[in-house]
Image (cartoon, rainbow, N blue to C red):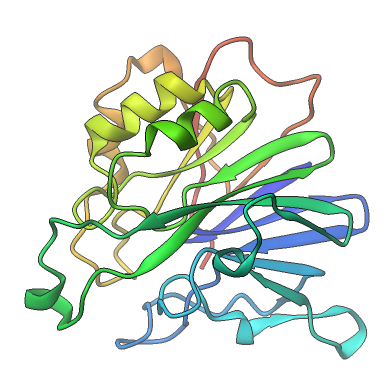
Amino acid sequence: MKITFYAHASFRLEEGDLAVVTDPYTPGPKPGSGFDPINEPADLVIMSSSTDTFHSDPSHVHGRSGGRPVVVDAMQLPEEGRTVLGVPITPFPAFESLSYDFQGEFGRHPDANALYLFELGGVRVLHLGDTGNPVPPEHLARLAGKVDVLLALAGAHATIAHADLAAAIGAIRPKVIIPMHYHHPRGWLNIEPVDTFLAGYPDGMVTRVGGSSIEVTPETLPAEPHIYVLDQTR
């Protein structure tokens, strides 16, 4: 499976003839995300939210042969999940930070969203959505030992605190951790750069890929958790 980082919380995951895009942002200047459009075809789009500018705009993801991709809002899935285009997807309800001052910065209350676990090419991927609180113990119990790749919120502030993220990583035990949702000059959110997250881990646990993509298969997963930093492409 090939994983490519677009921007913020949006990735492209490809296996064979199937392409999945996660959490597409609204492109363009504020009130958009600041990031460029994706403008690539995909078969399936999975979103952690249906209302967030940074997580729920599939309008710039094209379908095959001029059609539209299948769009799945993880918040609308049943608790047991659903298989879409051969991809099993399981939701885990979440909320934006319940302590962050959303009223002061955005004039709204914290939004509901969802973590979601899906499998592609025999690799189990957990996207942390837009959660802003410690991952609940009941979620951790269901996820422990069942995640190969963690797409990890690394910007703190309105999303999960780094200490709580470290606790979740320790409980879930993913083999590959790919940071996302951190500060980039094109974006306008006041969040931490990826280096703040990386400072909590030994140098030997971190690989800066020097590109936007990484190949992951069940056979090439590392024996111990390892962080791979991808370059943003949008």
